[in-house]
Amino acid sequence: MKRPVHFEILSDDPEKLAGFYGTVFGWEIATMGGGEQSYWLATTGPDGEPGINGGFMNREFDQAVINTVEVDSLEAATAEIEAAGGKLVHGPNEVPGVGTHAYFADPQGIIFGVMQPVTQDD
Image 1: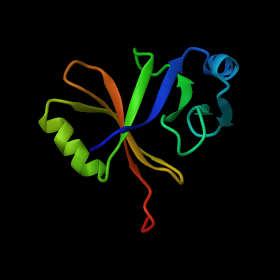
Image 2: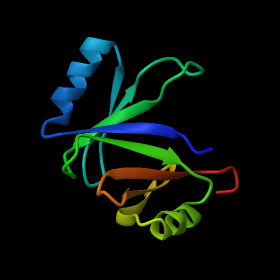
Image 3: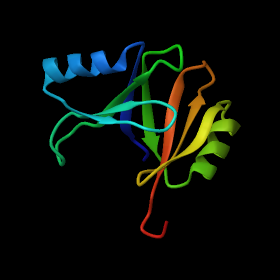
Image 4: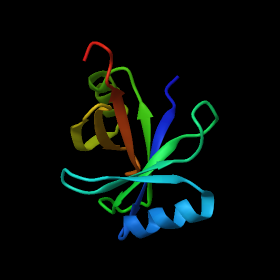
């Protein structure tokens, strides 16, 4: 079963919003600069406890939160998503040391991410 492994909160001022969540919930925030845009990683709790970590980024889509699901094969997931009526909207893009990521829209236009993690063979 595939599960969400990451969330992204989109904002017109992601740095300020990351600070808000860090203050309110005690999340550890780390800036990940470079590339086309800055990104703020959020560690929401200790490893091994229920929950997922996430990030803050500039508003690139009309919704406020995007959930990412981990898959074994981005190519196979793309075929399944498209066969079920979804469509690729951005990517795929390599995330160094993490994996290959793409954004899709479901049949109602809701954006979600899919991530194929780096494996030991990559």
